[in-house]
Length: 567
Image (cartoon, rainbow, N blue to C red; front, side):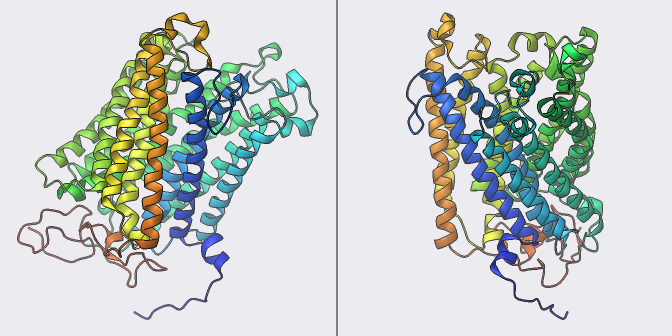
């Protein structure tokens, strides 16, 4: 085939305002990691304050009650929307989807570039909220009114002061981030449907691509109510409307419904891409076809429908009718069934496999083990009677960190260590990767497992000094606070090992093979790093993505683009 010629691009057009999906994916990843550093620092500050109330915090100073609330709010918002979403959806989707389906780029490259820069602007607006008069929003990451809707009514500022308040700027940042994600989701869907290589039938598509697209659909269907709720909240802040003011006929509970109709599916929006990456890694490093491929896809589709039907289990203490609470409680238990099926399929893939405990694999196994703790404690919280007792306590904090941290960081690091050789052309240091894993694993458990006990003892998530609660100042709870804080510090410091390994490998790492893992999917059948256009010759697909343990072959796998007779 005649090679296409390309005009030489400037540095800015090639690396800054690039339309290449690979560069955009890397941009999302790097920006997401910068925001993770910000969110991690905020967590260190308020975690230290909880263990040593009133103490001077190293690298920060003293933390006021107002700053505590601001840091709690922004930490949660950053980690969910500005770390999990860009890394697991935007970065992973941009890097992987075109390569795994045999396309040369995204369907809409310019829209793809625009989505990233909307995301950058949203980051700037969010971080700028720390420096406006009055400080960042302190209403909690869920932005519940009246805490998040009181700027106009309490201080009666002029229009511009209200618009540039911490609350309003956070709402604007969320709006910009949502626009960015919608642009990316549209691109993922159109690319996956219209640009698959010849022979890439729907059930030859890797599970990761399926899950990224299902997550995009879930996001699109659930985000509308949040947009409406955020617009009304912004109007309450800026021009003094009363959508959430009971004194003027409004209802603050309305915002809870609008928020959680998006907020609960959001958990599955970030879970599915991470689970998809685990499918790729587990199959490769157990050298077995993924067990029940079609069933996994169907279960993911079922879970995406159920995800938008159980939002009100976050509102069991909001005055919900007990009969309605029972409906949402039962629905919450039911939604665990398809995910249990997916995890059992992964375990069946591991069973009897020739398991290789490479760095990506140990991160994947760590993800499965820790997420199961989050999932099982979620079953407790799905019971409205139990949830009423622990709602707003550190039991809930521990639960959703055992849910979200494995998804974002263990799943994210598994994907990073797996695909780093492909996109950098370099190899990482395995020893440093394993040290990074074990330090992260133990420090994470030290940070959050003890909080289950503090939560059951009544420790509330929105109090910065527990001196007024004598029972919580007794043993073992005060010791648990200190263990959790030490765990947090070690957890943060552990990430510097990853950072060193990342930078050192980019500079001094050995050259990676095109297919170091002997994987069957299409991205491993091209150069490392992939050239512009991804494939020198457009691929044709003949096989499924998980043809491993093939008998009577010199290699134990069949690449998707290799025509071969299979028994």
